[in-house]
Image (tube, rainbow, N blue to C red; front, top):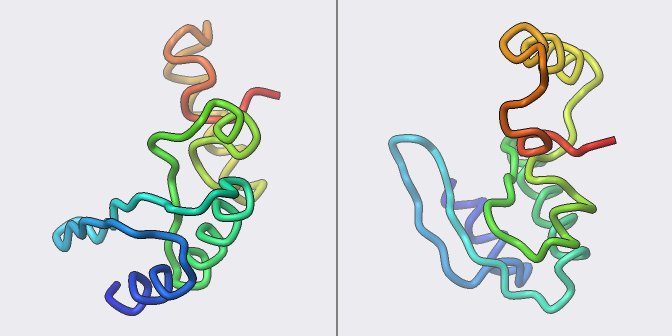
Length: 102
């Protein structure tokens, strides 16, 4: 994790961060003025480090374009859809909160 944080700082993607060592989580703020470019770059760095970058707070246009969670493989997406359908067959619990609406 220290190497990832240093890489993200050196790349200019983050300026402030908090590390939760027990959960292996980095909470950070992005300082870029190009949120779309910086989001893609930060997510790519996380993926290369074997991690995933989730957006907790961003302008609405960034959330709509990228979704809160990074893309997953087709198999994981299918499993997630089947799990949601099993627990929420009517699709009323937080629609659109965990996935990008098609």
